[in-house]
Image 1 (spheres, rainbow, N blue to C red):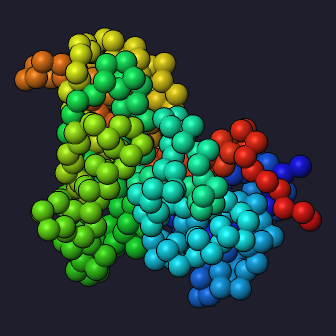
Image 2: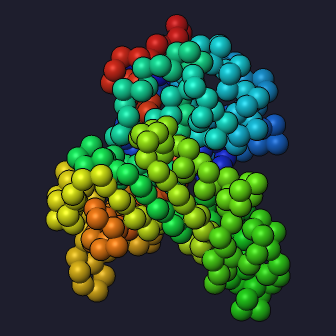
Image 3: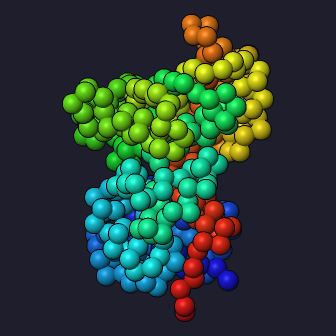
Length: 342
């Protein structure tokens, strides 16, 4: 017997990916509902061989379902997630609305699965930021072995992290630069085509951006509050796939061979690390795939116990939709999901 599942924000990039992955991993679904804002009522989305018409978020009866995959943005989640949770289903929220709430687990199943047990306080589980999710999958097995003291991250984040509007802007600007249209920025603050923008989300008083703050705060909540984390987040002209340059300083010795061996055995990680032309992963190869890929593992000689590595993953999958579905799988495997009566 399967579950009744509602996907809120079903017309967006991540919502569509959630539905694709539910079908791809054969999650036990008895019935699925595509839910969106009123302007999207009737828009058709696919679930396997089925075509579903979007239903209205404002009038949908959530007491009919067991699981809600929420991917409609922070404002929508703040308005709806707690209301939905009180009706019975567990809400797995992809937005930033509840990530740092003390009564809401922030889960990456390969890293902190036991933290899921506390979700009943609000019936909400938070999905981390896309750049955080792939980072902690790579850091967790290393931290368990040698304890991480400090991490410095520079991200190279694809435009799909800004939704369909971000992808459209890159496509349209690329065409426009060759004389086929207007290249004026609309979604981003500067031209994204053939450029790199060191600005994701809003600026904070200390000069960092909210995206950078999210990486710091979420890594500490998921992994260990004692780890020092600093990040610079950059938007680059890539359609799908976030990349990260990661510098790790450990409390105790960790050489590059040991690091490579640990990561090869780690859940959710694939190591592609040959010191030759093309012996590393790029976003093009990671797009459409499940794992977090790690390459360019090497010693940092400027600190006593330092390692550099390159980390790449499909931000719409492990960074969002896949992680949400894996949380649902974790709840199912642990017997924590209740099926509503028919």
